[in-house]
Image 1: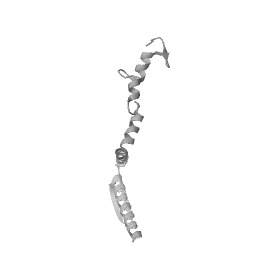
Image 2: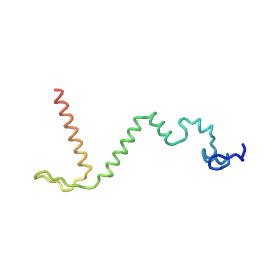
Image 3: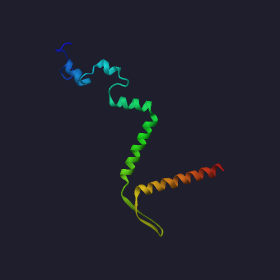
Image 4: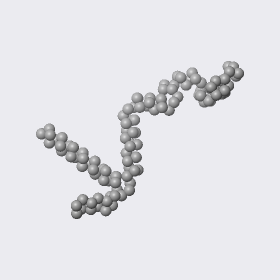
Length: 112
């Protein structure tokens, strides 16, 4: 290997190889890996092999975001009925349950 030749940033070939592939790895070994070396390619490979697990992970992340954003309390006033301190997360969950029950009842009523 000639040390006099340079690539890109003016590094010798050996230094350029180390910058691109790290110590102990060669371009040939990197090309032989199943999905290349980039993180994006590895994640894409995981998603294509395990779509259900990827969907579960995405749902878990979304639920965690909703939980972390809705921990403060709020009050509810409907006519003469009042709840002074109710966490927003509980309100969202109860609303989802009421919506799901309504959807199921309407579906059963329409089907007869």
